[in-house]
Length: 160
Ligand SMILES: Cc1cc2nc3c(=O)[nH]c(=O)nc-3n(C[C@H](O)[C@H](O)[C@H](O)COP(=O)(O)O)c2cc1C
Image (cartoon, rainbow, N blue to C red; front, side, top):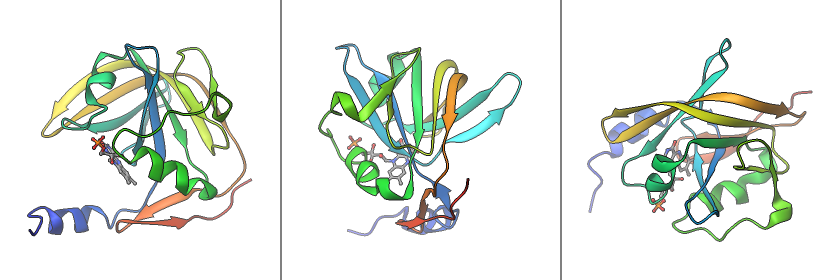
């Protein structure tokens, strides 16, 4: 069956992005993580970011209940991490694969940058919810990003 949204997806996919993993702690006290490319910086003062979650995503309920989330920007050698958390019901992270800061949400080790955030706004918009959050802690490292373009992964330029 042909996907009626394919032409729009193809056009949206011409916008090259980085790749991130967003994570929160669910009601069972475990990590829920999802691969995203809708991450955007919003404001410096106060420091705000956002990303959008699809209403039908299996992670949707956990992020709807969460008060906070983390975002890990992936390096070029972390495509396997992106693929893992783009799958339905991914296996949980091993404890030595992530850091934990203030909110408790796991931040993936080996990242290019990480943000620990408290959710301050939710906007229902079409078939997604926009989750706006205040950055409470962050870091960044030298390296090259994992990129996403036209439904495929690519490597970006190295930065110090
Ligand atoms: C590169 C990439 C970026 C993605 N970005 C988002 C996103 O910003 N928001 C979202 O809800 N899903 C995004 N997804 C889809 C989710 O990672 C995941 O595949 C989807 O929720 C299906 O899992 P589910 O069957 O458990 O719902 C992205 C997937 C990929 C591969």
